[in-house]
Length: 309
Ligand SMILES: CC(=O)N[C@@H]([C@@H](O)[C@H](O)[C@H](O)CO)[C@@H](O)CC(=O)C(=O)O
Image (cartoon, rainbow, N blue to C red; front, side, top):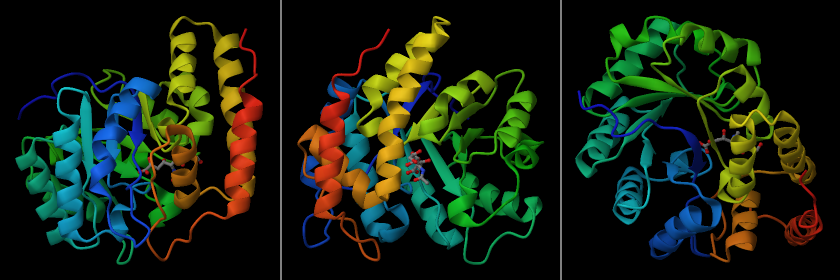
């Protein structure tokens, strides 16, 4: 198995899928989006076709084409391009995994199937193993997001012995607030052989203290720079400054979560901050309201004057 070219560390932006007003993928802005993430947000890892990317709302041909676009446009700019290949159909997932391998993706990730759900760890591993086998050279991540999949198998349980079943297993994307479960994963990872990527952005500092090795999230599309500053402060063990950054981030997040944060709203915020038109989400998701846009813009402006000590 080919090892990852470089350890995956730091922030991974869960990218949105830019769309036109008529709901088609707007491939034209991907190149600009890559440059924005790298130059304006200091984020050099991306997670494509995930929840934020509406991956499950795209057709298989669309997912293939989009993955290809991100890999091509990210070449020599991005450190890691991870493609989410999870699907309800094992065959679709395998096709996407094989395709990700062919285009040179740096990793693949898979959520638990969530219509017919795996009833236990063995059933889940059996599914993941078949997908991973379709890309035997590509580092594999399990995407744990129980609130969306309804699959409540604990990550610590899944991690136990997983590499015996899936030799390419490289880590977890842990999108849950259960820090006990997360801590047990850290405990099992004492050799730091796996990447434990935390996925609840507004709680990242707590997860770093618990031993997260990186983070994947939607907010790194627009709060990447500030979150990177938090990571640097944490590295220097300046916890008071790190907390100051986390509270700044939380102030904004708390505000937009109360207004109703989802994929459409994330697209709106990225559009406001980057100037790149991300467009509406695909049905059944609904466009963000004008009121959300105005409030989010005002809040972003009011936070600009925040002082960091
Ligand atoms: C449920 C959800 O969308 N969670 C986000 C977070 O980044 C989330 O948007 C953020 O913490 C704000 O609540 C990520 O964990 C999801 C993600 O990385 C993805 O889009 O694949």
